Image (cartoon, rainbow, N blue to C red):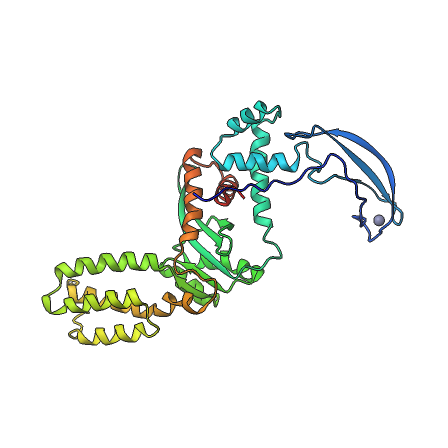
Length: 348
Ligand SMILES: [Zn+2]
């Protein structure tokens, strides 16, 4: 468990500075136009002073809020605190009770709104930002009666979720149309995923460098080779050890080594109708699958900041799923989106 830091917005009871720009025109001079005491909900501050100003140019009158204060009754700090408490596992009722113990009254409904709003904030904080490397992975989360497919996009620089879509990872078209605007908006150039075929198609169509998580590759290759060791004829076992070595070393020209191994095998007898997949055919298909994807195994070796596994994305999904279990099923997609974003971003 890493050290937890919570960044809460600062709240001031009074704003010392004056407005710089008129919200309506580019005016820069103002007259104070009265003010009012406002009561707010916050652990420390109960009352704030909000001044009104009148633009000398267009005569527009507006409220100039102290830091951490806006139209809402809860301060920004309290709203973030409610969302953090929810991410840590409290129910809306629990948040309401916890805050009451500190003398702050908020309803369950208000706590619910805080979580929804936090999710929108987390999503919109990426506007205008650049993200070079993303991790993408699918998950299934319980909502409105059954497991629903979601697609999670993580910034691999910070480990923070960028967004979550109601998209099935197995459909290349849906995945592409979901990712395409993000890729353009954020200037993404590398995508890290597991080795599902839809991700390969999408990476190619969007012209992204594609790193396939080596943890996944080692897992399925390990399993496949382990089975083959028991079923293959003695004379081919050395090829299994060679493949293991190539995967361990991940050399630049590993695909050529794999093709050379492939050529050692007897000619294919595939194509016969009803033919069983013999152990040699299985070995052959493992080699082809590895050789074909070789370039996608090694992006981390020459691209800076590209991890060789998709672990940060899986950690994000882990946090989302852990929280989803205590929710016991989201009722709507907007609710699920908010829950996953807030839970996935954890305590930041
Ligand atoms: Zn103005």
